[in-house]
Each structure stands twice: as structure tokens, then as C-alpha cells.
Length: 77
Image (tube, rainbow, N blue to C red):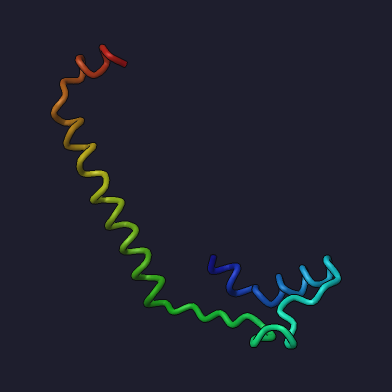
């Protein structure tokens, strides 16, 4: 996603040259280009939230697996 944002103008130009049509024409849209601003603080928050939620989501399966004897778990596999 970040690579896409950083290169949005080049991607837009490539699509326009391949299709032969102007994307986001000024007569139709208010924007003639696509502004993209990446805030490092927001990126850090997204990464931390994703890691935190992944950790929390893994607690119940790990707890449940720890309650089962290995031989019994393999018997029904």
C-alpha cells in the first residue's frame, strides 16, 4: 500500500498511456492528481494494532491446545 501511494503519479501515468484515456479529468473531478501523504505515526499505530490483535487472537487457541494431552490430540488427527 505504501509503495502504491509513493508511486501513484507514475502508476496513473502508466494507466493513462496504456488505456489512452485521461484518469481523473479536471472537468469531471475536483482533483487532477491523487495526493498521498503517509504519516509515520499512523503507520506505527497500524503495525502495533495488527501485532496486538494477532497476539490476542492467538491466546485462546494456544490455551485450548495446552489443555489437551498430546497423545489424545494425535489420536483424532
